[in-house]
Amino acid sequence: MAKKDKKVLPPSGAGLVRYFDEETRGPKLTPEQVVIMTLVLAALCIALRYSYS
Image 1 (cartoon, rainbow, N blue to C red):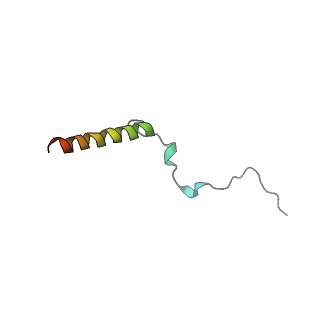
Image 2 (cartoon, helix red, strand yellow):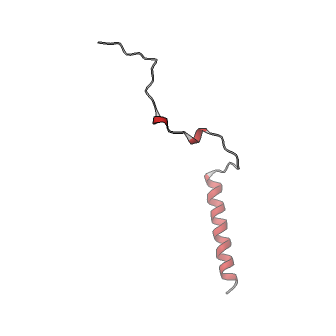
């Protein structure tokens, strides 16, 4: 029986790019900030919709 070499790791990800490891330009937003901005935009749209009737 052949000995297993413990230094060899199995391939992980099958060559897929791990996007969360890459740094990107642009603002860093938390999920809470995105939800708040969405609610503010929705309220603004509703206010504008009913302000012209």
